[in-house]
Length: 93
Image (cartoon, rainbow, N blue to C red; front, side, top):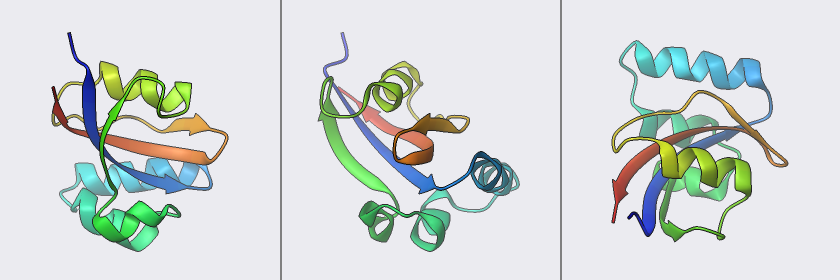
């Protein structure tokens, strides 16, 4: 069973912006560099890296996606109270 996930994310204000960034990533742009340029979260400075977290540490919508993604996968836009996230799972343990 997975106890912790290490993820990066990009937080933006609209689903359209998140979808546009996801398309840029699919075209070969770096998730980390796009996080540095576009994320509204302070973690953007670190390429979006949130470090490891356990269940209950993130808002439910974010956590559900992060714990269900495969390592290395990037989510479709995820809406939370903070905006729209693209989530990339870096590791699970």
